[in-house]
Image (cartoon, rainbow, N blue to C red; front, side):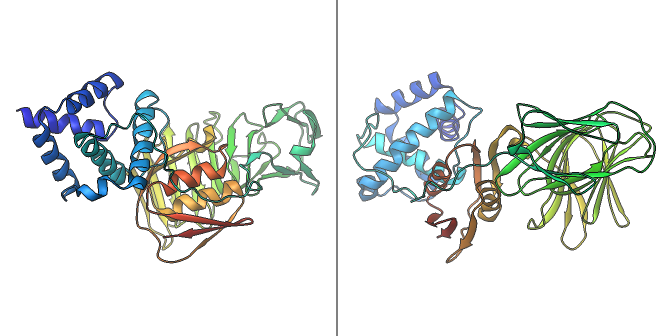
Length: 390
């Protein structure tokens, strides 16, 4: 029973699931020397290998352990903000940290050694709220260069820009005749929000575009075309289904919250449902999604669905990177779009999976440093090119 309790507590500690109070009590118990041999046995079972004494004396490892200590307690105090760490590695490192404590090293004071950091130049900046609006007559309006307030009135629709970076369409006069199309587009390093004429809210991610009618009133459906990624909160209108068209896929809804990722460089088109119900179709295939489900349209045209945690999927709408078992290519595609850099791989790509989160407005150096501290990857910067190394 005592071994089972210690094993359970150790696993909770390593995963950062213990409260701060219980963590301190657990570590105090370890420091006391009680159950020392039993705890060492449990650590070695967790690592699958015995802890070698000479490894515990290496200054660079001690520096890494010290940083790990800070990260674990940061997670305990602020559970909603997770640093980018490989969970397999953080488990091993945290267990070794306990091993260090057992042989007499107490790491509350930082060592003089430092963990090597990625060299990054200051010209690589986070993205910003900006986009380009293309009107039906071909006129382009660069929204970051325009003043807040009304921009233009077109076909009885007033188009305004708000101070918090949102484009709003308001019906001021019902008119007949041809319906023009507008397009809102972002480049790498840009994001923007828009309120469509029907009241639907759309968050547009970097390197994306959405085309839509200036007004939906005379249309049988509310149809928009998407390239890239967007999150939708669709205004309810049972008489006029809302349709999102992407390459090879169509999503039909009446009123719901969902995310569509249709970047050309992604291996599949993913539609994630948070609220309501949608129908996803591609060629002769159809799927109905319920909240907490995600459909995937693969490159070879297969449409399937699965249960998922939607939180990491829509983290970008809250200006966060959040990874949940993502491989290095998936992580770097997000970084490439947001920081507007070119990514080149050199040597063998790591197969490590990454989990955790960080603000998208943090300097890219901070993001790269956290990725490097997993021990699975290294970076080199040359201008706006980011080299990914083993």
